[in-house]
Length: 139
Image (cartoon, rainbow, N blue to C red; front, side):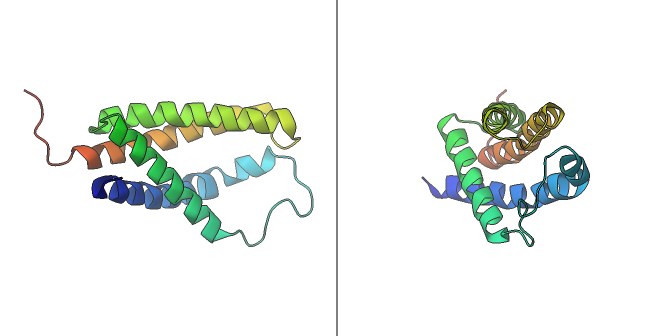
């Protein structure tokens, strides 16, 4: 990976951590809590923030690697690419969880897929901007 990709991954990872806290940890937290099966010991209190941070950094690097390979270098192309990646990953992850665990209801799966796709689209727009900054627009 080149420096631009590593820095883009770092930027995306930090943004994912902060934006994820806002969207999933604040705005949608009550919705998630009311649509998930809960039992004593399921949720860690306090959460392992270091693990969330490392996961976000790994995701940022994954997006940056894919964007670099795909020459994604505009906010618009970044949003679309991020949206599609987020949609496909959320469908995969959520349906695996639904198939194997009594954890989430179907309503939450739908909301999570849409929220994750849009969230990843926003991350992708920023990353697309990062990869394209300094380039002249095609005439």
